[in-house]
Length: 325
Image (cartoon, helix red, strand yellow):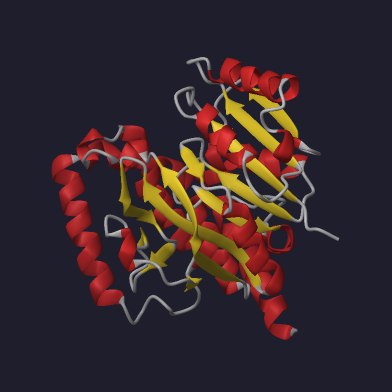
């Protein structure tokens, strides 16, 4: 039986990108059972753009080869619930074997889904996979070829900013970017905490790193396929840090500490402690001097601490249960 795939897209003022994104999804060589678009209260006409696209698919033969058995579902949320909660919402609405979590500013080459699902079917211990994401503005330059985490638990996009020609070798990675990630339903069920795949307390930013870390601790592998290619607009990373909104900086900053609190085990932090302290001192010295408003994000950490503590314990319980098997 052919494995089923659904595509989940969360939009927020994505009118400039969503049409091209959906066109690329409908042109996939692998049959897509369902496309779910969760709109987080856009104010730029995104919902109208999606509705127009659905009408176009239903009224023309333009995508006849790929639209067979493909349902497109639009869910307009009355408020912005955040990237992580909205994707959890989409996951609850589908039951496919694989889920493609896709940013609206990504355009996939036609064989993207086929390449990843083919490999994952052959390797059931691989719970997530990504292709080579290139910058749309500079298609010879890498946006991401997966996630790498260094010795003090800082996560980066592999190869970001480097020539695409240097990243042609497929292989295992720490994790995959949530911009265009295929996740196996079996892994989603296995690592979810309180029926949440992405931690809803993150709202947005670093939720994909959190998932990658949790998945690895529970024995799942992640794979990078160089033959599957997508183009990513990556709007908020175009400029310098100072050009990012204070909201983005706060979320990106504090979610790292939420992730560390939940996922660090035992005394694993002791060996890199000197490097970790040096990094934290430099980082917080910069923030105190240049971006003191970012530190207000700690309010959310302390407010959510009781729940974070419970989630940490649930992750540890899952790991212990796996270790007993």
